Image (cartoon, rainbow, N blue to C red; front, side, top):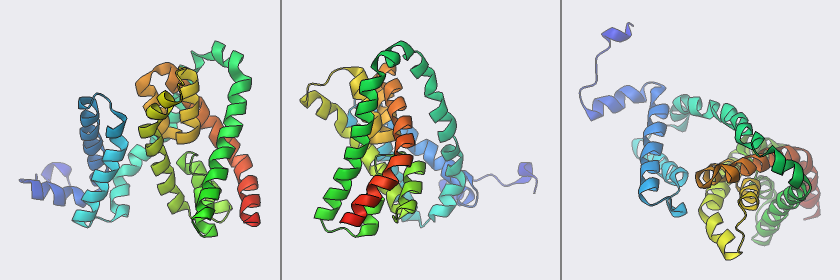
Length: 249
C-alpha cells in the first residue's frame, strides 16, 4: 500500500489504533515517555529521586497494562532504541581517553576496587537471597544483578538462573544505585569524582553510568570504564564464584 494514500488519523483514539498496528508503537512511546520523564527530572533540579529511567519504566508498564498491549508488540519498535545501546557503550571510550593520564596512574587501585566490588555484589546478593529463603534458580538470577543486562542474562542462563528475572533485577539495581548513590557517597564523605564514578559504574552498570555523566564528564568516564571492565571480569569469574556458592548452599 502506498504510504501517501494511507488515511491520516483524525483523533487520539485513531492515532493509538494506527500506532498499535505498527512497530512505531514501541519507539514512539519510549521516546515520548522518556522525554516527559526527563523534563520532570530537570524541573526537580536533577533530584536523584526523580530518576527519568525509573519514571519512564513505570509509565510504560502502566500504559502497556492499561491498553492490553503485548510486550512483544511494544518491543518491535523499542528494539531500535535497544540496538543503539551498543554504539552508545562504545562511545564511552571517548571521554575516557581524555582521562588517560589519570588512568595510567590509578590503574592498580581501580583494578582492586573492581574485583572487590564485583565479587562483593555477587556474594552479598546470593547471601541475602539465601537468608530470605530464595530458590537456587532465584539465587542464580540474583548473582549477576550488578552487571550490564546482556552479559548478566548470559551469566544467569549459564549458572541455572532465569534470564528474564535477571533482566528485571539488573534494571532495579541500576535504578536503585542511580537514586541512592549521591546520598550514600555524601554520608560516607566520598567526594572524589573518580571514586564516585568508578563505584557507581561497578555497582549500577549503565543506568548508574548515565547518572554519573549527568554529574560530570570525569565521573561518567570512570563509571563507563567500570561498567565495561565489570562486564568483562564478571563473564569470566562469576560463573565460577556463583557456581561454587550455589553448590555450597
